[in-house]
Amino acid sequence: MSSVTRADLGRRRAAVAAAFAGQGFVFILLTTKLPRLQERFDLSPGDFSLLTLALVLCAGVGSLLGERIAPRRGSALALRLGFALVVLSVPAMAAAPSVALLAVGMSTYGIALGLADAGTNMQGVGLEHSYGRTIMPTFHAAWTCGGVAATVLALLTKNWSFEAVAVAGVLVPLALVAAPYVRGAGPVTPIGDDGSKVPWRRILPVGIAMVLFYMVDTAATTWGPSYLHHVFGSGAALVAVATLPYLVASLVGRASGDRLAEHFGAANLVRSAAFVGAAGLGVVVFAPHPLIAVLGFTVAGLGLSAVAPLAFSAAAKIAREQTLSEPEAVRAKVDAIIARFNQFNYLGGILGAVMTGAVGNDSLRYGFAIPMVLVLFLAPLARSFR
Picture 1 (cartoon, helix red, strand yellow):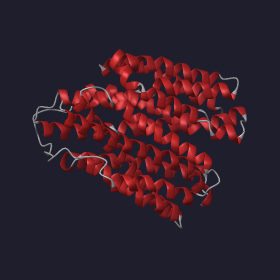
Picture 2 (cartoon, helix red, strand yellow):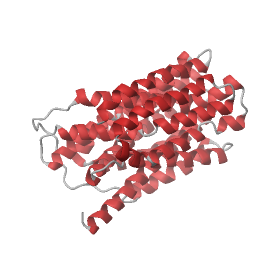
Picture 3 (cartoon, one colour):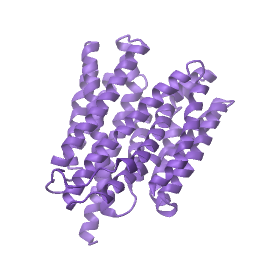
Protein backbone atom coordinates (compact mmCIF):
# COMPACT_ATOMS: atom_id res chain seq x y z
CA MET A 1 0.00 0.00 0.00
CA SER A 2 1.55 3.31 -1.03
CA SER A 3 1.76 6.23 1.37
CA VAL A 4 -0.75 8.16 -0.78
CA THR A 5 -3.22 5.30 -0.67
CA ARG A 6 -2.73 4.88 3.06
CA ALA A 7 -3.37 8.57 3.65
CA ASP A 8 -6.44 8.45 1.43
CA LEU A 9 -7.83 5.47 3.32
CA GLY A 10 -7.15 7.27 6.59
CA ARG A 11 -9.13 10.31 5.46
CA ARG A 12 -12.00 8.11 4.30
CA ARG A 13 -11.96 6.20 7.57
CA ALA A 14 -12.17 9.44 9.58
CA ALA A 15 -14.98 10.66 7.34
CA VAL A 16 -17.04 7.48 7.68
CA ALA A 17 -16.47 7.51 11.46
CA ALA A 18 -17.82 11.09 11.52
CA ALA A 19 -20.92 9.91 9.68
CA PHE A 20 -21.46 7.12 12.24
CA ALA A 21 -20.96 9.61 15.10
CA GLY A 22 -23.43 12.05 13.57
CA GLN A 23 -26.01 9.34 13.12
CA GLY A 24 -25.66 8.21 16.74
CA PHE A 25 -25.80 11.78 18.04
CA VAL A 26 -29.04 12.65 16.26
CA PHE A 27 -30.76 9.33 17.01
CA ILE A 28 -30.05 9.32 20.75
CA LEU A 29 -30.78 13.04 21.14
CA LEU A 30 -34.19 12.68 19.50
CA THR A 31 -34.96 9.47 21.40
CA THR A 32 -34.44 11.23 24.72
CA LYS A 33 -36.57 14.21 23.70
CA LEU A 34 -39.48 12.50 21.93
CA PRO A 35 -41.52 12.30 25.19
CA ARG A 36 -41.68 16.11 24.99
CA LEU A 37 -43.77 15.73 21.84
CA GLN A 38 -46.00 13.21 23.59
CA GLU A 39 -46.66 15.77 26.33
CA ARG A 40 -47.26 18.62 23.87
CA PHE A 41 -49.97 16.72 21.97
CA ASP A 42 -51.29 14.94 25.09
CA LEU A 43 -50.90 11.54 23.43
CA SER A 44 -51.72 8.35 25.32
CA PRO A 45 -48.93 5.75 25.64
CA GLY A 46 -50.76 3.57 23.11
CA ASP A 47 -51.05 6.35 20.51
CA PHE A 48 -47.44 7.37 20.96
CA SER A 49 -46.34 3.74 20.64
CA LEU A 50 -48.13 3.58 17.29
CA LEU A 51 -46.23 6.65 16.08
CA THR A 52 -42.96 5.12 17.24
CA LEU A 53 -43.80 1.84 15.51
CA ALA A 54 -44.53 3.76 12.30
CA LEU A 55 -41.12 5.41 12.61
CA VAL A 56 -39.38 2.03 12.91
CA LEU A 57 -41.34 0.56 9.98
CA CYS A 58 -40.44 3.58 7.84
CA ALA A 59 -36.80 3.04 8.82
CA GLY A 60 -37.12 -0.39 7.23
CA VAL A 61 -38.49 1.27 4.10
CA GLY A 62 -35.55 3.68 4.11
CA SER A 63 -33.10 0.81 4.33
CA LEU A 64 -34.78 -0.88 1.36
CA LEU A 65 -34.57 2.42 -0.51
CA GLY A 66 -30.85 2.42 0.19
CA GLU A 67 -30.74 -1.09 -1.27
CA ARG A 68 -32.15 0.32 -4.52
CA ILE A 69 -29.95 3.44 -4.64
CA ALA A 70 -26.53 2.15 -3.61
CA PRO A 71 -25.92 -0.50 -6.29
CA ARG A 72 -26.82 2.01 -9.02
CA ARG A 73 -25.60 5.36 -7.69
CA GLY A 74 -23.33 4.42 -4.78
CA SER A 75 -23.77 4.21 -1.01
CA ALA A 76 -22.42 7.75 -0.57
CA LEU A 77 -25.56 9.12 -2.26
CA ALA A 78 -27.83 7.01 -0.05
CA LEU A 79 -26.03 8.31 3.03
CA ARG A 80 -26.18 11.96 1.96
CA LEU A 81 -29.86 11.62 1.09
CA GLY A 82 -30.51 10.16 4.55
CA PHE A 83 -28.85 13.08 6.33
CA ALA A 84 -30.61 15.58 4.06
CA LEU A 85 -33.97 14.10 5.05
CA VAL A 86 -32.96 14.36 8.73
CA VAL A 87 -32.36 18.08 8.22
CA LEU A 88 -35.86 18.42 6.76
CA SER A 89 -37.80 16.04 9.01
CA VAL A 90 -36.59 17.07 12.47
CA PRO A 91 -37.71 20.74 12.14
CA ALA A 92 -40.96 19.45 10.63
CA MET A 93 -41.54 17.36 13.76
CA ALA A 94 -40.70 20.35 15.97
CA ALA A 95 -43.03 22.72 14.12
CA ALA A 96 -45.91 20.27 13.54
CA PRO A 97 -49.22 21.96 14.47
CA SER A 98 -51.19 18.70 14.54
CA VAL A 99 -50.77 15.00 15.27
CA ALA A 100 -51.24 14.19 11.58
CA LEU A 101 -48.30 16.40 10.56
CA LEU A 102 -46.27 15.06 13.47
CA ALA A 103 -46.86 11.56 12.08
CA VAL A 104 -45.65 12.73 8.66
CA GLY A 105 -42.51 14.23 10.20
CA MET A 106 -41.75 11.12 12.26
CA SER A 107 -42.32 8.84 9.27
CA THR A 108 -39.99 10.96 7.13
CA TYR A 109 -37.38 10.81 9.87
CA GLY A 110 -37.82 7.03 9.91
CA ILE A 111 -37.00 6.85 6.20
CA ALA A 112 -33.98 9.10 6.81
CA LEU A 113 -32.88 6.84 9.66
CA GLY A 114 -33.02 3.74 7.46
CA LEU A 115 -31.08 5.41 4.64
CA ALA A 116 -28.39 6.66 7.02
CA ASP A 117 -28.12 3.33 8.85
CA ALA A 118 -27.74 1.42 5.60
CA GLY A 119 -25.41 4.03 4.09
CA THR A 120 -22.99 4.17 7.02
CA ASN A 121 -22.72 0.38 7.23
CA MET A 122 -22.29 0.00 3.45
CA GLN A 123 -19.49 2.56 3.55
CA GLY A 124 -17.99 0.83 6.59
CA VAL A 125 -17.83 -2.70 5.17
CA GLY A 126 -16.50 -1.37 1.87
CA LEU A 127 -13.66 0.44 3.61
CA GLU A 128 -13.01 -2.56 5.84
CA HIS A 129 -12.51 -4.66 2.70
CA SER A 130 -9.96 -2.10 1.46
CA TYR A 131 -8.07 -2.34 4.74
CA GLY A 132 -8.15 -6.13 4.71
CA ARG A 133 -8.78 -6.38 8.46
CA THR A 134 -11.56 -5.84 10.99
CA ILE A 135 -12.41 -2.17 11.57
CA MET A 136 -16.23 -2.17 11.84
CA PRO A 137 -16.28 -2.19 15.68
CA THR A 138 -14.51 1.18 15.81
CA PHE A 139 -17.07 2.64 13.38
CA HIS A 140 -19.85 1.50 15.70
CA ALA A 141 -17.81 2.92 18.58
CA ALA A 142 -18.02 6.28 16.81
CA TRP A 143 -21.84 5.85 16.68
CA THR A 144 -21.86 5.17 20.43
CA CYS A 145 -19.58 8.15 21.05
CA GLY A 146 -22.12 10.34 19.29
CA GLY A 147 -24.82 8.76 21.44
CA VAL A 148 -22.90 9.49 24.65
CA ALA A 149 -22.44 13.12 23.60
CA ALA A 150 -26.18 13.36 22.87
CA THR A 151 -27.03 11.85 26.27
CA VAL A 152 -24.85 14.41 28.03
CA LEU A 153 -26.42 17.22 26.00
CA ALA A 154 -29.90 15.90 26.82
CA LEU A 155 -29.06 15.96 30.52
CA LEU A 156 -27.76 19.52 30.29
CA THR A 157 -30.90 20.60 28.43
CA LYS A 158 -33.45 18.46 30.27
CA ASN A 159 -35.77 21.44 30.72
CA TRP A 160 -35.55 22.57 27.12
CA SER A 161 -38.39 22.06 24.68
CA PHE A 162 -38.14 19.67 21.75
CA GLU A 163 -38.05 22.66 19.40
CA ALA A 164 -34.93 24.11 21.04
CA VAL A 165 -33.10 20.79 21.07
CA ALA A 166 -34.08 20.13 17.43
CA VAL A 167 -31.95 23.09 16.38
CA ALA A 168 -28.86 21.47 17.90
CA GLY A 169 -29.89 18.11 16.46
CA VAL A 170 -29.97 19.21 12.84
CA LEU A 171 -26.66 21.08 12.92
CA VAL A 172 -24.70 17.83 12.80
CA PRO A 173 -26.42 16.26 9.77
CA LEU A 174 -26.44 19.66 8.04
CA ALA A 175 -22.65 19.83 8.37
CA LEU A 176 -22.31 16.24 7.16
CA VAL A 177 -24.49 16.88 4.11
CA ALA A 178 -22.47 19.95 3.18
CA ALA A 179 -19.04 18.36 3.75
CA PRO A 180 -17.38 15.77 1.47
CA TYR A 181 -17.40 13.26 4.31
CA VAL A 182 -17.59 10.16 2.15
CA ARG A 183 -16.31 9.33 -1.29
CA GLY A 184 -17.88 7.31 -4.02
CA ALA A 185 -15.73 4.55 -5.41
CA GLY A 186 -16.04 5.41 -9.08
CA PRO A 187 -18.72 4.31 -11.53
CA VAL A 188 -21.18 1.81 -10.12
CA THR A 189 -22.10 -1.28 -12.11
CA PRO A 190 -25.74 -2.34 -11.68
CA ILE A 191 -26.09 -5.78 -10.13
CA GLY A 192 -27.88 -7.47 -12.99
CA ASP A 193 -27.63 -11.25 -13.14
CA ASP A 194 -24.03 -12.28 -12.62
CA GLY A 195 -24.80 -15.96 -12.12
CA SER A 196 -24.25 -15.85 -8.37
CA LYS A 197 -26.90 -16.22 -5.70
CA VAL A 198 -27.23 -14.32 -2.47
CA PRO A 199 -26.09 -16.81 0.22
CA TRP A 200 -28.94 -16.11 2.61
CA ARG A 201 -28.67 -19.56 4.23
CA ARG A 202 -25.19 -18.65 5.49
CA ILE A 203 -26.08 -15.02 6.24
CA LEU A 204 -29.28 -15.81 8.19
CA PRO A 205 -27.54 -17.11 11.38
CA VAL A 206 -25.48 -13.91 11.47
CA GLY A 207 -28.69 -11.93 11.05
CA ILE A 208 -30.32 -13.80 13.94
CA ALA A 209 -27.31 -12.91 16.08
CA MET A 210 -27.83 -9.25 15.23
CA VAL A 211 -31.54 -9.53 16.12
CA LEU A 212 -30.53 -10.89 19.53
CA PHE A 213 -28.10 -8.03 20.10
CA TYR A 214 -30.56 -5.29 19.16
CA MET A 215 -33.23 -7.01 21.24
CA VAL A 216 -31.02 -6.52 24.31
CA ASP A 217 -29.78 -3.09 23.24
CA THR A 218 -33.29 -1.71 22.72
CA ALA A 219 -34.58 -3.29 25.93
CA ALA A 220 -31.74 -1.70 27.92
CA THR A 221 -32.01 1.77 26.42
CA THR A 222 -35.83 1.87 26.20
CA TRP A 223 -36.86 0.11 29.41
CA GLY A 224 -33.77 0.62 31.60
CA PRO A 225 -34.89 3.97 33.05
CA SER A 226 -38.44 2.64 33.62
CA TYR A 227 -36.98 -0.43 35.33
CA LEU A 228 -35.12 1.72 37.88
CA HIS A 229 -38.14 3.93 38.44
CA HIS A 230 -40.88 1.30 38.77
CA VAL A 231 -38.96 -1.57 40.43
CA PHE A 232 -36.82 0.45 42.84
CA GLY A 233 -38.61 3.81 42.96
CA SER A 234 -35.36 5.54 41.97
CA GLY A 235 -35.28 9.33 41.87
CA ALA A 236 -35.22 11.43 38.72
CA ALA A 237 -31.46 11.99 38.90
CA LEU A 238 -30.58 8.28 38.73
CA VAL A 239 -33.27 7.53 36.16
CA ALA A 240 -31.93 10.29 33.93
CA VAL A 241 -28.46 8.70 33.77
CA ALA A 242 -29.64 5.08 33.77
CA THR A 243 -28.44 4.26 30.26
CA LEU A 244 -25.27 6.39 30.28
CA PRO A 245 -23.04 3.68 31.90
CA TYR A 246 -24.42 1.17 29.37
CA LEU A 247 -23.48 3.48 26.48
CA VAL A 248 -20.03 4.19 27.91
CA ALA A 249 -19.38 0.46 28.38
CA SER A 250 -20.54 -0.16 24.80
CA LEU A 251 -18.12 2.53 23.62
CA VAL A 252 -15.23 0.85 25.44
CA GLY A 253 -16.14 -2.58 24.08
CA ARG A 254 -16.46 -1.38 20.50
CA ALA A 255 -13.32 0.75 20.62
CA SER A 256 -11.32 -2.36 21.54
CA GLY A 257 -13.34 -4.68 19.28
CA ASP A 258 -10.98 -4.42 16.29
CA ARG A 259 -7.99 -5.64 18.28
CA LEU A 260 -9.93 -8.30 20.16
CA ALA A 261 -11.41 -9.73 16.96
CA GLU A 262 -7.99 -9.85 15.31
CA HIS A 263 -6.41 -11.51 18.35
CA PHE A 264 -9.13 -13.97 19.43
CA GLY A 265 -11.23 -14.25 16.29
CA ALA A 266 -14.73 -12.90 15.70
CA ALA A 267 -16.39 -16.24 16.50
CA ASN A 268 -14.76 -16.49 19.93
CA LEU A 269 -15.63 -12.86 20.67
CA VAL A 270 -19.30 -13.44 19.85
CA ARG A 271 -19.35 -16.68 21.85
CA SER A 272 -17.99 -14.91 24.93
CA ALA A 273 -20.48 -12.09 24.38
CA ALA A 274 -23.33 -14.58 24.88
CA PHE A 275 -22.20 -15.49 28.39
CA VAL A 276 -21.08 -12.02 29.49
CA GLY A 277 -24.33 -10.50 28.19
CA ALA A 278 -26.45 -13.12 29.94
CA ALA A 279 -24.51 -12.61 33.17
CA GLY A 280 -25.04 -8.83 33.00
CA LEU A 281 -28.77 -9.22 32.40
CA GLY A 282 -28.90 -11.76 35.22
CA VAL A 283 -27.52 -9.10 37.54
CA VAL A 284 -30.25 -6.74 36.29
CA VAL A 285 -33.04 -9.27 36.87
CA PHE A 286 -31.97 -10.25 40.39
CA ALA A 287 -30.53 -6.88 41.50
CA PRO A 288 -31.42 -5.97 45.11
CA HIS A 289 -30.48 -2.31 44.61
CA PRO A 290 -30.75 0.13 41.67
CA LEU A 291 -26.99 0.69 41.50
CA ILE A 292 -26.50 -3.07 41.17
CA ALA A 293 -28.96 -3.02 38.26
CA VAL A 294 -26.98 -0.22 36.60
CA LEU A 295 -23.85 -2.36 37.04
CA GLY A 296 -25.65 -5.22 35.30
CA PHE A 297 -26.56 -3.01 32.34
CA THR A 298 -22.93 -1.88 32.18
CA VAL A 299 -21.62 -5.46 32.07
CA ALA A 300 -24.14 -6.39 29.37
CA GLY A 301 -23.17 -3.36 27.29
CA LEU A 302 -19.48 -4.15 27.57
CA GLY A 303 -19.92 -7.81 26.66
CA LEU A 304 -22.35 -7.48 23.75
CA SER A 305 -21.17 -4.26 22.12
CA ALA A 306 -19.11 -5.80 19.30
CA VAL A 307 -21.78 -8.23 18.07
CA ALA A 308 -23.53 -5.85 15.65
CA PRO A 309 -20.42 -4.52 13.85
CA LEU A 310 -18.97 -8.04 13.59
CA ALA A 311 -22.29 -9.20 12.14
CA PHE A 312 -22.09 -6.60 9.37
CA SER A 313 -18.49 -7.65 8.69
CA ALA A 314 -19.42 -11.33 8.53
CA ALA A 315 -22.40 -10.72 6.21
CA ALA A 316 -20.24 -8.69 3.81
CA LYS A 317 -17.51 -11.35 3.75
CA ILE A 318 -19.98 -14.16 3.10
CA ALA A 319 -21.54 -12.13 0.28
CA ARG A 320 -18.16 -11.49 -1.37
CA GLU A 321 -17.15 -15.14 -1.22
CA GLN A 322 -20.05 -16.19 -3.43
CA THR A 323 -20.30 -13.23 -5.82
CA LEU A 324 -18.88 -13.99 -9.27
CA SER A 325 -18.32 -10.60 -10.88
CA GLU A 326 -15.93 -7.76 -11.58
CA PRO A 327 -14.98 -5.68 -8.49
CA GLU A 328 -17.52 -2.93 -9.18
CA ALA A 329 -20.40 -5.39 -9.54
CA VAL A 330 -19.22 -7.20 -6.39
CA ARG A 331 -19.36 -3.93 -4.47
CA ALA A 332 -22.82 -3.22 -5.86
CA LYS A 333 -24.13 -6.61 -4.75
CA VAL A 334 -22.51 -6.34 -1.30
CA ASP A 335 -24.06 -2.88 -0.81
CA ALA A 336 -27.50 -4.26 -1.67
CA ILE A 337 -27.08 -7.22 0.69
CA ILE A 338 -25.89 -5.00 3.56
CA ALA A 339 -28.91 -2.71 3.10
CA ARG A 340 -31.21 -5.74 3.24
CA PHE A 341 -29.24 -7.21 6.17
CA ASN A 342 -29.80 -3.93 8.04
CA GLN A 343 -33.47 -4.99 8.45
CA PHE A 344 -32.40 -7.38 11.23
CA ASN A 345 -31.52 -4.25 13.21
CA TYR A 346 -35.15 -3.05 13.24
CA LEU A 347 -36.59 -6.50 13.89
CA GLY A 348 -34.44 -6.79 17.00
CA GLY A 349 -35.43 -3.29 18.06
CA ILE A 350 -39.15 -4.06 17.77
CA LEU A 351 -38.73 -7.31 19.71
CA GLY A 352 -36.74 -5.61 22.45
CA ALA A 353 -39.23 -2.79 22.87
CA VAL A 354 -42.47 -4.74 22.56
CA MET A 355 -41.57 -8.09 24.12
CA THR A 356 -39.81 -6.63 27.16
CA GLY A 357 -42.71 -4.29 27.86
CA ALA A 358 -45.40 -6.93 27.29
CA VAL A 359 -43.78 -9.65 29.41
CA GLY A 360 -42.77 -7.11 32.03
CA ASN A 361 -46.23 -5.58 32.34
CA ASP A 362 -46.49 -6.69 35.99
CA SER A 363 -42.76 -6.43 36.74
CA LEU A 364 -39.93 -5.50 34.41
CA ARG A 365 -37.80 -8.11 36.14
CA TYR A 366 -39.75 -10.65 34.09
CA GLY A 367 -39.34 -8.49 31.01
CA PHE A 368 -35.55 -8.58 31.23
CA ALA A 369 -35.50 -12.29 32.06
CA ILE A 370 -36.52 -13.12 28.47
CA PRO A 371 -33.52 -11.45 26.75
CA MET A 372 -31.31 -12.83 29.55
CA VAL A 373 -32.13 -16.34 28.31
CA LEU A 374 -32.41 -15.65 24.57
CA VAL A 375 -29.02 -13.94 24.34
CA LEU A 376 -27.37 -17.28 25.17
CA PHE A 377 -28.29 -18.43 21.65
CA LEU A 378 -25.41 -16.24 20.44
CA ALA A 379 -23.07 -19.05 21.53
CA PRO A 380 -24.14 -21.64 18.91
CA LEU A 381 -24.53 -18.90 16.27
CA ALA A 382 -20.94 -17.76 16.78
CA ARG A 383 -19.54 -20.35 14.35
CA SER A 384 -21.14 -18.38 11.50
CA PHE A 385 -18.75 -15.48 12.24
CA ARG A 386 -15.63 -17.43 11.24
